[in-house]
Image 1: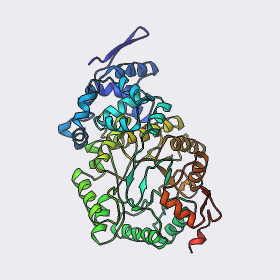
Image 2: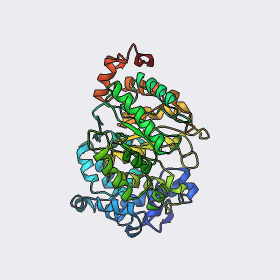
Image 3: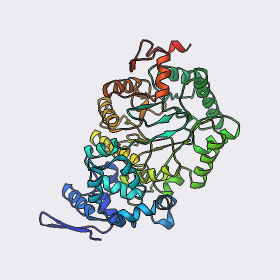
Length: 453
């Protein structure tokens, strides 16, 4: 393993694989904040040059956190298909990149090989890719999962209906839900972030969303994004929901800050398979976001791209129905501006797909970022073209509870029409029955929630 190169007469010597990975990363303000980013463009190119010649085995043998100290590392390493790994362990990262981008390589072949890769290796190969490379690879990977309906079919661009309310008022949540449905939003999930994380509030919103789903016979899923232990307690009361939610992080220390462990995740997975209301076998919903490990002092001098990929390695262990990065939610300390936002989102969706996950994105930003709604619309268009499974649908793209900006009901409808995408098939048939959709576009009842009253 050789960690040195000469560039324009200057010798660049890196001390560890972790340093090479961090300095080969595209610019992220979080890595700069952590003091691990390349000092300039030339050092970044030098790190990419070294990374290109490292072997798959070199990266696997140097995880971000040691196996003995971290359950995320153990899950990622233990889930590797060793027969596949043995075939490709001596490939260089450059060779892996070229193979993935070859027009002769199929998406099925890429997904099979990725079962033999650790999350660090997947992060490494993406560091040698440009934005269009990430889009090309991601668009070839067709991953499906089934809860009540199946996400991820050909030309499907789904949406999460996010009817958040500042005080979880039932009438307010119901109004936002019905309005979103009238624009064709909600085929991925009807999913609310609660203002109050209690069993009573979780049960009340579960019941509301379940009643709406059942009353109007909507082919979709329901979820309340309270803490996983709150949902487990709510399920023990006899209340029902289709999906169990939890935010994930890329190290054990960061996961512990979130109040989760493999035992808790495994128990919740088993409970929702057994006692939840889902018809299919994929009952977990995970959210991630670059920078969360650094924010809890648990990044172990590892760049946020690698840590984000480790989230996906943890997620795939539990066969989720939905995963999405909340890509700009952490703010400019971690993703500074539009350029960094676009790069992070493309990395996240591609990285999730390479892990075999049904990957979505909350195309979002906080109000102190150098980003605006035009940027969100541009990025959402790139993601829809890249095979992103779903995005969020909020009234006017404005979350009045979490106080951040995302994609609105109209954005999803426009992207479907522009790029000839469709909702999940059963949901599209339901929309056509209500004349919300006609001939693959918004129809005469679009935007009129009074049809449900």
